[in-house]
Image (cartoon, rainbow, N blue to C red):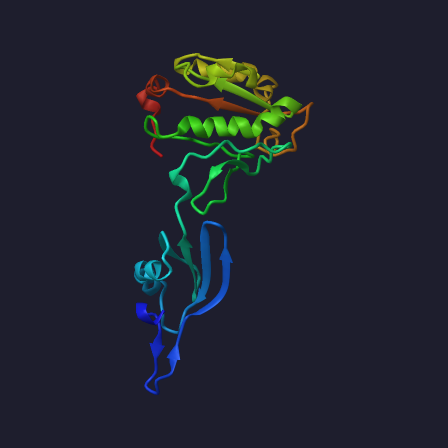
Length: 236
């Protein structure tokens, strides 16, 4: 670290170096947990990140503050997201608290939580929105077969969900805002008129064949979004 200016030398020529408390390695990432010297800031290490990257011959280096006086220096050996990955094998029992749908930048599975959540996937054309949708459907497939998960689909453009109607308990290509009536008539919770918190609706409860976990997998087109009345528009 001396060559990157991260050491401190006293008038008596004693050299102090930031202490590496722990090292964690994966095939893609090496993470150094570092304790800063007195008076040293995370910004100093961040400014030296490019120099450290070349020292360790890494693809990329970043510095993350964990706590006062503690940082993580993360070295990426390569970028695992530059290649197309094969679909992940679904678990026999889907974990709604973290479904594996892809890879994160550290090469570890990226897990998406569905239980008790609403999820919006947005992006430009050909950005990969459909891959996210089908990764979710694939991860939930064992639950669909077992009868513990129900999927409801809305596909106004007939470009995504139309290709796998057998995966869905109910499917529609309705346009404009008729989808609300479709959901009301197909969702067990809406049919019974239940109201209340997500927990009271069974969204966070353990799914079973008699009380399956139900969620809409909707592929909404620009026609549907733009059909919303202006007086109801809001910004996120």
